[in-house]
Length: 200
Image (cartoon, rainbow, N blue to C red; front, side, top):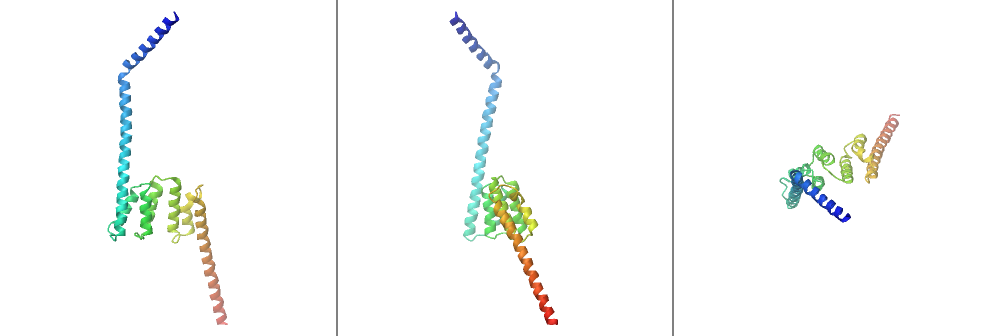
């Protein structure tokens, strides 16, 4: 008797499963097609990104080779385009190449390229902090302490490994300005005392 009930329960369960699939056949097929389309879309996007990265790397490398061989035509525009492409690998490299080889003398243009990297490029937080620090180093000689602090503020308020370097740079800037001021003041005092001594 128990065996008959078990067989009936098994047959009923199988029939319910068959009924579920026949009733929801269109919904299940739609879900399966949707899932396949999502996977194909993701895969296609990955292929597109890989091809784009290869294209950027080829442009970067060929531009550097041309520049090293003496062909300076277009190197600046190509490197600026690479920075504006916001690639996490080649955009910082392109900016550093422009700076290291002194290909762009306009500080505003270099600072705008730094801003693209800092604000619009998806980078690891430590890499972003390094770029902020490099921007501060690049501008340290031409800006005052307040502007330097403004640039380094995100770095100083973080727990980054670059925080100590930022604080050292700020200290160095403040100390060198104070030393310059004290030097000018002491020289002015020496000149004043010299003139007083000559007039007597």
